[in-house]
Length: 567
Image: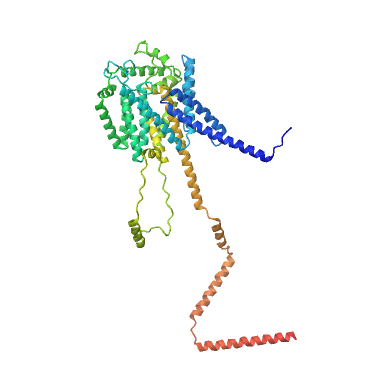
């Protein structure tokens, strides 16, 4: 038997279903964002866990799209070069010596790149999320720095590791690498963190914020020196020196001071940095040999390359330096040459479009402070020209007591950022971070490391999301300004009705002539009256008596005629 359900019950069930959908929409939005933050936090600490967080964030983001009609897919500024890079790198698999290996390597690496770009670019849609993402990146950096200091203080013997030429630098026995694979990769990561902190530092606006960020900068510089990575140290020095010369000489002075302090405190660091310009260290000579061999690869395979991830398989054919030594060379120690060799010149250009386009976008963006709202003047406002107002103001100032504002705790001040300062600092820091990667890419290929390359794609998506957020805010501001302008131009209804009522009807030409003639007659009459001589009061009285008598006679005649008519 079918049960009859009343309309009221149907309405209640519909409301419950809608409430359940709204609850799940909120959960998908919250959970997907939390796992994006988890990926950003774990990239530097535990890469496998970061990959798991990325996969979960991807599934939750898709569910968020399916359940929330307001959460729509948005196009980011550099979606086209991303698609080109994915396509061309995939096509390069066809020419790889080992197509199975290249495909496996491609869908694992390029897969996590694209998913990272997707979840970060689609989920970062508010200033609050920008702040939270920067905060978790900074928290992870603090753990990396603390572990690096721990390694340096308690010691770690790296003599058996192939990070340094022991014959050229016999005194070098400590090179920290913290949670990363080797000191060079840690140094590249620290360059990024220092640039991010510096971008926020120059836009901080308060002393408390600068203190916190200054401590982070100093700790990052000290840990960077402990890696003894020559290229990364020189890169960060160049960035600060150029910024100081172009923008603020105090930054240049601070950079010189810190560099002198580190070199005086550690003579081995000075020896390492100066060796980059000589052939004392075999690593410099090897890099030149790798680059020469890579250029030969590019000349032989300019369009499709040698295949994604196939550098270590093809290099022995072009090896003239090691001469068959039992050493696997997995990359060209140059980011640009490595991409051009593996995926061809077109694929490398697609990546450069994405990379440098994001860099210039981050550095070009301007975030201005909001204009203060000035209230309209009133008759009761202070007037500097009025003597009474000046005296009243003097009396008010003499009795006014300034309220003491409680001092904001340093951590609370650090968390509370004006929107425009936070976005400006984040954009500047991300742009400088990409500059550090571009310069490090001249002497090394740090993106061969999976967490480093994932972190790069996270930053690329971060820049695109901030640019899109700025565009949306500018569009909203323009729309509001247009509405305000329309409101000022509109006439209220009651005023419009009064104006229409006061409008005079159109006058025909004939009526205009008649009116002008009557006006002329009135003017002539007034002129005659003014020109006539004044008579005595006696004459006026006599004339008045005659007029009264005539009026009375006329009245009597009218009454007699009226009586006769009645009879």
